[in-house]
Each structure stands twice: as structure tokens, then as C-alpha cells.
Image (cartoon, rainbow, N blue to C red; front, top):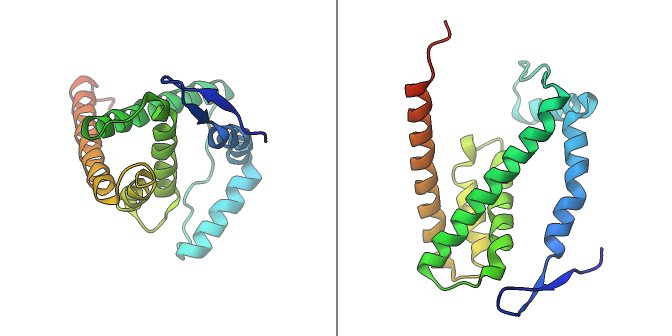
Length: 174
């Protein structure tokens, strides 16, 4: 893939090669997880690694009409939370707006690292370590570590608030 260079907000050259790679592999990942053979094989490997012999997930029954809205919802989530990470970092140190997509990518990769680890429930610790490591490419590591912890605390507070809103507004279905 050729390197794509554009001019950022302040006239600097921005390289979007990493983002292009993510978009290149995203259809492959979507196909892989929608493919029943691939999913059952991946679950079998997971069971062999963890030693759990129970059926973890037999089948995901998701109508095709819901796949694209869910993909857009997750895209919105990553854009919003990556933006929140960018503005949290920007509140502590000065950053140029041309790094906005980079911070979305940093959050996305950290979330993915936490998601695929089977030894850490909810990715606790893994997300923060990968977030601190990736942020340290742009800020000093001590600041990156503090940012990762602050971001996790803020994210937990927001998730608890949303859970409270859902529990207060959704009626019992039984």
C-alpha cells in the first residue's frame, strides 16, 4: 500500500498508512467472524488453550440486517472514545489536531489487545499497559501511564452511569 500523505490542520504532513492497513483488514475480520467454520475453529483453539471443555458459544444468531448498523455503532464508539482520549491528553499537554486519528487508532488497538486476552477479565491491565505503551510514542511514559489510568477511571464512571440509566429506565420483562 502506498503511503498516503495529507496536510493537517497546521500545514504539517500527516501519514495515514496505519489507518489504511486497518481498513484493508477490516472486511477480512468481519468475514472471518461471520463465517461459522472459522468461528467454531477459533472457539475450539480457545477451549484447548484455556482447558475449558464446556460449550462457550454454540452459535450467534444475528440477522444480516443488524450487522452493518452494529458495525457503525462500534465505529461511533471507537471514534467517540478515541476522541475522548485525545482531548484528555490535550488537556494535560499541548497536541496538534492532526494527531486526532492517531489517538483513535491508539484506543482501538489497546481495546483490541484487551479484548483478545483470555487471561484478563474485561482486559483490565492489558488495555492500560498497551495504552500507556502506545501513548508513550507521543508523550513521556510517566504521563502516558497517568493518562491510561485516568482514562480507565473516566470510562468506568461513564459505564456505571449508563448502567444506572438503563436499570432505571428499562422495565422488567418477566
